[in-house]
Image 1: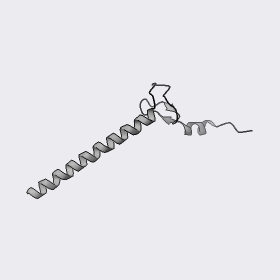
Image 2: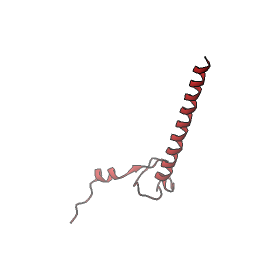
Image 3: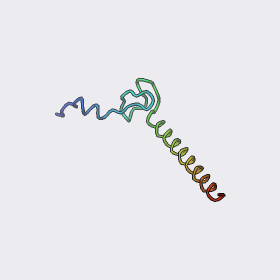
Image 4: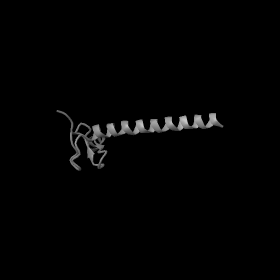
Length: 72
């Protein structure tokens, strides 16, 4: 017979929804609080886009700094 899962172990399995902060299981297809569909998949997509924008901004800043130094 398996032992019942303790409250702490159950809380460790839950993660906050990226949209509303409600605790849901990572494998959930939708959030029962804000009804967002595939919240963790959308969060990964947003993170990738944000990371790409940061890289682009850094590359432009670096190119501008190099041009500024070479002109001086």
